[in-house]
Length: 248
Image 1 (cartoon, helix red, strand yellow):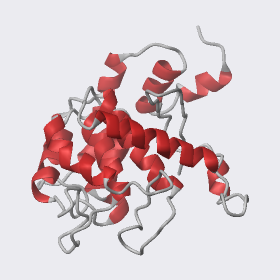
Image 2: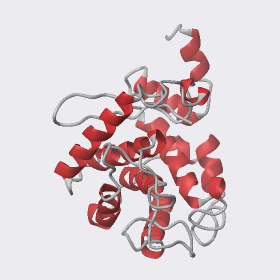
Image 3: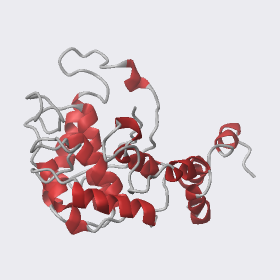
C-alpha cells in the first residue's frame, strides 16, 4: 500500500487526477478508472453542459472561457477517454462549419481570412487526441506551419498586429498540437513538423523557459508556478528534447 502522504492526497482528488497519478507517478495505466472520468466529477460536469446544438457556451469560441474550444481542451487535459462519441461529434461539427480561409479554425462568424495559430495548435492537440482522421487535419497543420517565424517559434499576433518575435505561449500551444498529432500515428508533413518542433524548442530554450531574451528578466511571475494542465512530452528526431510543460 502507498504510504506517501502527497500521493495519498492526490488520490483523494477528482477521478481524472486519480487516473493521471496512477499512470504518470505510479506506472499503472488504469483504463477502468479512465472510463469513470465521463461519469464522475469534473468530466461528468463538463459533458453535462453540452448544448443541444453540440456546442458548449454559444459556439466554438464564444464566450471565450466556457466555449466549445476551451471545454474540449479541458476534456482532453482531464484525459477523458479518446473514444468519447459526444466529443468526437462536436469536433466533426467544428471542422465542417468553422474553417478559416487559411485552412485553420476561425474563431467566429465575423473572423477574417486568418485563423489564430494558438487556437489551431490547441485544436490540433485535442482533435488528434480524440482520434480525428488525419486527412481532416491537413489544412490545420498547413496553416500552423505557414505561421512559423524567422526566430523558429510562433506568435498568434503575427497576423493581427504584425508581431515579429515569437511568443512562448503560442510556441508551446503549437508544440503540444504537433506532438499529439504525431503521437496519434499521423505522418502528414512529418519532416516539416519535426523541423518546426526543433526550432520552437530552441526558441524556448533561448528564453530558459521563462526569461525575456531582450532584458533577461522574468517575463511574468506566473511562469514560475506549477499550474494546470499536466505534462506533455515533446521529442524531435534529430536529437533529444523532453519537456515537462505545466503552464497557465
